[in-house]
Image 1 (cartoon, one colour):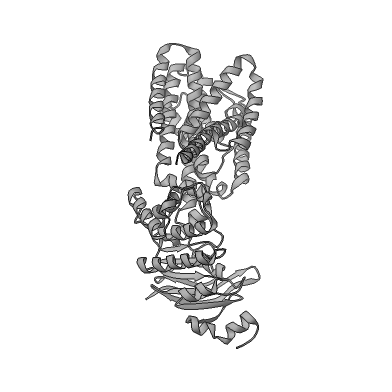
Image 2 (image 1 turned 135 degrees about the horizontal axis):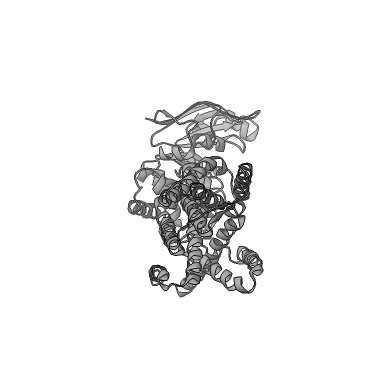
Length: 242
Length: 307
């Protein structure tokens, strides 16, 4: 079943075409990778899906409903959670209260504070952050802030999770840890996941399918091994065909 | 937790003192009490917007002035129980009308915009009054000090209760998230535009009514006094000195500044402004979270040392 369907999505910034006529589908429960060099339009595409930008053309269907142009809070309540490449914690709030915002507002399920609190405890447990619940977010290391960003997105009770470079700047050990956490959340919560990642190993490991963007256009789509041997991708990445 | 017990009993003692005060038959004390309650009502309301969302309003006097004007213009045409709430209502309506454009602006621009807006309304009203040939309006037969005191006490209680409820509500959690990071809040489902507008509106109602009551106290109205920017500045300094987002912060700040102004009023009134300026500088630079924030940070530090 199609969870997310992009149909001919474009975004122009004045003269620049940041995203150009991109179409692809993500099925429910799938993990799909989004790959491309810097400036390929990956984050712009995320911003279009989450309502931080409105597409110039095209449709973005979430469970069949066109969400293009809705505000971010409305899209979040329809079940889309995301992390930011540059983390945006609530620095003055505790880790638990960071998650509480997501629980209280991300869906209608946890409007009640007690229910929201319980939900947050569950997610803190699943992401291995229970011990940090009372620490102000400003006191966390970058790796933990990235984890908080992930936990907070999941706390919205989202069905579709967009991860924007959650592994950037982490050590190999931390990358392995976060990869395991993502896999576990995906399985336990039945999430559909769309991942932007420059750590190729992690992306190849996690994704069932990969979409490659180049200068705002989709140039390839397929299983990780197909992408790894795709001549167009090699041309773009290494300047030569295999 | 032991310290949590203190605020509750403190509020009870405070309420008792203010309930008994009018029976002391002491006009000077009653005057100080009224001034305390007025600033408390204003600062708690200001905090509903500014402490909670981080949108610092430097123009809250506009609501006070509008409320004053409402009561004065309708004097002897509407009973006070209609005209004072009407002043609050008009302040709220004004907040909603200007809120949509004004709340799109963040940070220092919002501060300057609110200040400018209050000044604009003041000069428009001065021009209107001048065109009508009125330079100041006098109120004859205003209620006596004790009655005014009771009105102000109820407004101070209402304002404190409002801040308390907002602070402990889902709505309040959304407002705090907006203060911490507006983009993240919106991404997590907080309807930021609607919430900011609600906060702005809620923070305007009681100042409007306070303005109306204070018109009865001064028994005359002059736009340049009812819209005096010093009233806005006082609210900020009081909230800043107290710190925090709970109702406790403004209480500390208001007590501190009302006491200071009373001490200086008889000896050296011109010093009040000088000291106010100095305090503002010291607090912004050294204790940006106010006395309450400083106290909490100390407690946290000691708590950690004990672990």
